[in-house]
Image 1 (cartoon, rainbow, N blue to C red):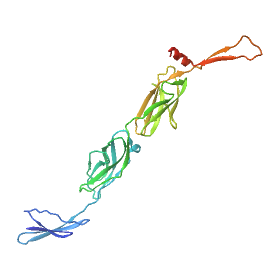
Image 2 (image 1 turned 60 degrees about the vertical axis):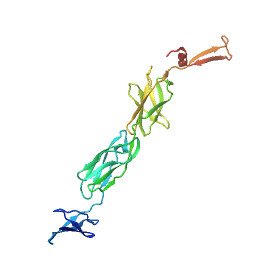
Image 3 (image 1 turned 90 degrees about the vertical axis):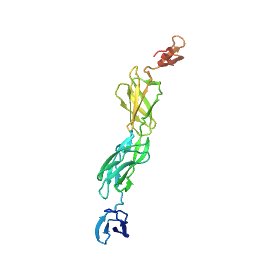
Image 4 (image 1 turned 45 degrees about the vertical axis):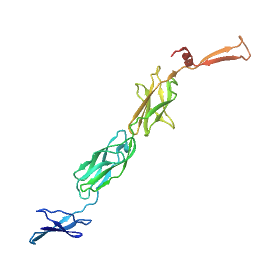
Length: 278
């Protein structure tokens, strides 16, 4: 016997193989009604109509922006969004974007999703997800920007230079912070003591600190938008005593005349250095 299928382009005759048949028939852009007529070897026939739906529309996927405006110091991030399929069937969601990797996530029904992704390297990346339905219709979601930075800030003591002189009992210290990400905060404090917030200027961060005698050093710390923290220890010399003054006066006792006075000054710190003292 034979089987005739009436599709949108007219009848198509298929050869029956025992009690089964198969073949291709053209369908319309929307749902189509298809008539299938089976005829046996002596001309007996029967017909049945079936409706066949056509789906060429990919799922609609919307990706949410990451927390902290997309700044992260880890390569692994979690992408959160919504996948909606017009037919309400299952959807497969896969991380997408240059250098982005991650396993596909299968959803039994459309709705919210959360899928892990791994970023390829430091820097800014446009990340999306690829959403595909059970029939193979697929499309990318919107892009979100992810700022991946795992490098801590570089903290450089500047004023005074390392090993320089700081006034006692209060000193003003300045340091520079270099970072690819925005620097959110910086502190300075004696090693082992609570830190003091530093003030950001045009070129330097500065902090006014109480300086202890025999100060072991001051630690500068800075944190960036991605959550990285950098630190550096600053050592210096203290100067708490005014300069030494030596005076020489010409002649003996004088009255009503101008004296000639001469002398010299010297830093006690310099004097101590010359003796090898501390």
